[in-house]
Image (cartoon, rainbow, N blue to C red; front, side, top):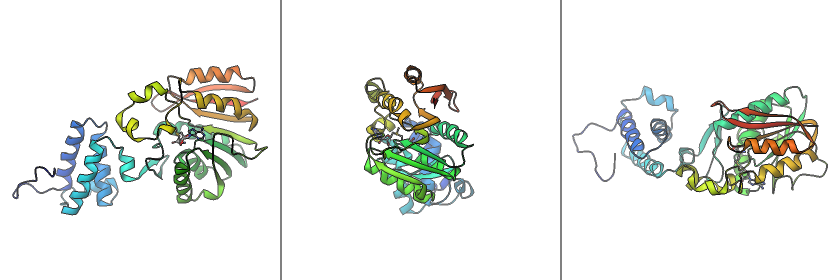
Length: 296
Ligand SMILES: C[S@@+](CC[C@H](N)C(=O)[O-])C[C@H]1O[C@@H](n2cnc3c(N)ncnc32)[C@H](O)[C@@H]1O
């Protein structure tokens, strides 16, 4: 597979099976977390087929061009570029999202927030919501797909991220129900906006910890999406302070945070008189992840 040591003329052909074995081994040596999965996603992308199709064409030989394209991806992945950026997409809540290095790659952890949000909106006939830091659009688009009577006001400070979010909203045909705003948290919203839910997966990594993140995240994902200031809660605290002005009575605030700082954020909520029913929810892996509260 490697360009430095081409396979001898009479050697075994480069079939799907052999390429997957070779690439998985290579990624294992380079300490990628999910070597086999990464190999399969990249090969399926090069062959333009669903990943499952690789298993029904195990003995198919790759063309020289396919091998060259895969080789380029393998090199970038071995240098810790995330697979989602290489193939330009990531699945979230059963939907395909376009991603580029301008947006955080949607994480399965964030599905906990979406499940909780859908539950909170269930009994409302028509609902309005705000999402702060929309990024790829994962939360807003997935929620809008499952809740047809919902209008969303989604903001991000990054114009590049907003472009991706808008494309994802169009792709899943919910763009007519999401208004996108560029700016700092609540600043761009119209005067008097009142909503049933304010949600955010804000940047929440402590600045001092950014350098200790895995190379995939540290060197490739946008710092703007990660850096939560000295204690990781700079943005979250601003949201907690300002959300009551936008929430209707009994409206819900949902914040995704890190297991290491979510309890401090819960204390900040408890210190405000505008909130009640404060809860911490766990993600599928059992980590404390989502902070929930109701406007008094
Ligand atoms: C952790 S990412 C979340 C992205 C997406 N909502 C998700 O869950 O995958 C945080 C997002 O907040 C945006 N952001 C950071 N600071 C902001 C601010 N002051 N106002 C608005 N958006 C901000 C970043 O650009 C980034 O897209």
